[in-house]
Image (tube, rainbow, N blue to C red):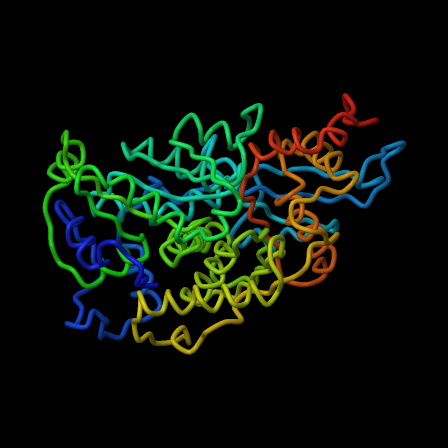
Length: 453
């Protein structure tokens, strides 16, 4: 979305950033920047995925969680008498149908294993986004989040790995002890704590901080959305060597990109769509079998990306998103906004599916099994995470991924006699447990040494 309140216009700032820009255009555009070709779903996928990515590969591990109905003697814990097993080498392809187990089960996409410090959903969002910044010779990235923001930590780590400077505006006061995502943000990025009264106006806060960074060396500032949209209408090129040299030269003007909180932008959908393409390969989940994906929703961007990917590739997949941080109306509005932006940026006239007619309705938004105000942890949920970890070797957190786990387990029981397979996307969140341990100390003090057997 183009914003009018700028020190420099978006066009001027982005033009200045294009020194060293390497065009990775999808196809030749009209003077108005709108592609005028007709593509099949397969051709569209090829064009959409033909770009540079931050992740060297879209690959991820897929496990299968087996839920046993058999009673286990004297077993306590949040799941009562049920035992939970993790099959780390499940069958895929035609064997998914051939091996129809009596007990309920669901698949789990282990995106929590993508990076030690970057959540899986954050890595997917940055997958297509970071190369665009590099192509525009961005030197600094300004973004914001809460004190324990997984997004801020992901940006800090990913920028540092690529030689970019990150500037993280975190809401509230610096904690007495740095831990979790807050510690990672501080180690890898430049953190500034912002009073809540100023943080309430995020756009002004981000713009002001970015302008301050370039005030002494005649640099340039642009919002990432504007950079992204400009990449479809510009054709310039030079080597990456020139780009890197220009970016690292002493006293060279700063080129600052402002990234929205949570990276909930159309460009963030690309990496999630790339994941859908990977999972839909015939030797994995395939393109013909009905799947019901389950994911926890913060901003909702990952869920919309899954839904768009399924739609673009013509897959019989449903997406169920557990609402954690907003109302159903808020998430539906976010969905409409993302779909609209995606259609504007990739406005191809497609054959064989109705992307151009879809404005919303690609995600089923549902309440979590035990609703509560966002940020709260209920009694017994830390123990539930402990039980899952000890039985499966998979760590979920009570704030986000436990909600997806519970929903996947519930749906798998309902779908046992049907052809639909349930798939949970594990978005990560391990470092969030450290922040929660500070905030909810009584819950963590009650953890036992182990589960009774």
